[in-house]
Image 1 (cartoon, helix red, strand yellow):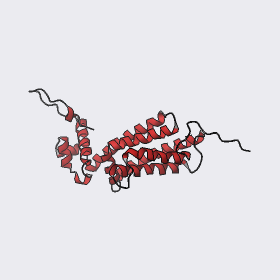
Image 2 (cartoon, rainbow, N blue to C red):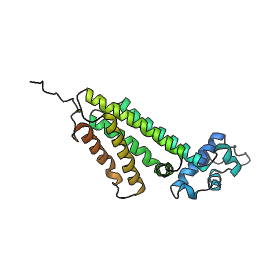
Image 3 (cartoon, rainbow, N blue to C red):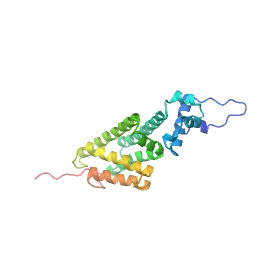
Image 4 (cartoon, one colour):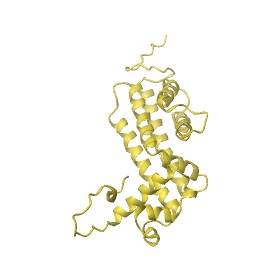
Amino acid sequence: MTPESATRPRPARGRRVPRPTGDERELAILATAERLLADRPLSEISIDDLARGAGISRPTFYFYFRSKDAVLLTLLDRVTEEADRASSAVFDHPGPSPAQRWRDCLDAIYTTFRAHRAVALAAAQARHTNAEVRQLWAGMMETWVSRTAEAIEAERARGAAPGGLPARDLAIALNSMNERVLYATFGGDGPAVPEADVVDVLLDVWLTTIYRTPSPPAEPFRQAAPG
């Protein structure tokens, strides 16, 4: 998220500095917003702060974004896409065991949002008052709930997980738990699970809920024939 202009080497004497392209300006605004959100809430960040940090004028800022909320929405969209790519890759290339598969998925989500914790915390707060942020967040949650429910049903179908409550209901509860626990951990909104333990704790709950044990076997269980 660091703008290219921040790392570009200084030009030789006598050469004009290349003017940034539109994409570079947009990235600079996004990078500035994420950096400032790490220090203070969106309500305390002004358009002038964003423009100044991106090295552009206030009128130029409005060429790219209509408001501060639009900047946050774009940041959230980029982070959720990153988390979705990372987690979906786990399902496309599953690990050697059910426990490892779910751990890899939880770790992918944790690692992504930890790297962008300021955006995640700002979005979690903004969704209560911003309909667009709320809609984007809900869409993200629906994607993960559907994917989780499908995976639970697949585990039940192959005999690895016992039947029980509807898979979608479990998926909603598990993903909602992730959301709240990670928010508390990243924001220090206690009581909170320490960062070093949070994936292990979430994994234990997920495995116990899906398999009725925190240590599911790699091979499907075999049910005894009736009679």
